[in-house]
Each structure stands twice: as structure tokens, then as C-alpha cells.
Image (cartoon, rainbow, N blue to C red):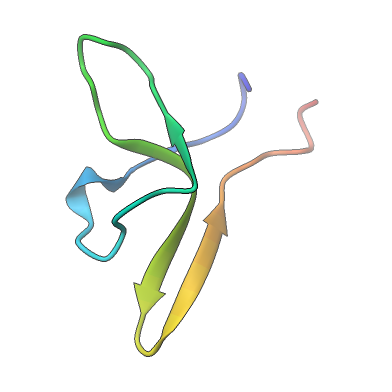
Length: 55
């Protein structure tokens, strides 16, 4: 997963429990997500940051 991106979800109130959580480092302990679901208006948005091109 060297070329994939993650997002720091600690700053977003509408993302509670990511589907795939990333543990980057035990020192920084940032709340990173690879796949997550966010509430947008009356619905939900599924976000996947998986990059299939670089494999």
C-alpha cells in the first residue's frame, strides 16, 4: 500500500467509525482512514482512497 492515500478523520465531525482504519505510527497515533462513510445532507457518501493503478 505504498502509493495509497489516507485521510486524517480526526478533524471531521460527520465521520465516526471508519470501515478501514490505518495505524501509521504508535507515537503520533493519528486517526487515519482508508475507507470510510460520511453523512452528507440526508444521505451517506462512501469514500475509498485505494489506488489500484500503482500495483
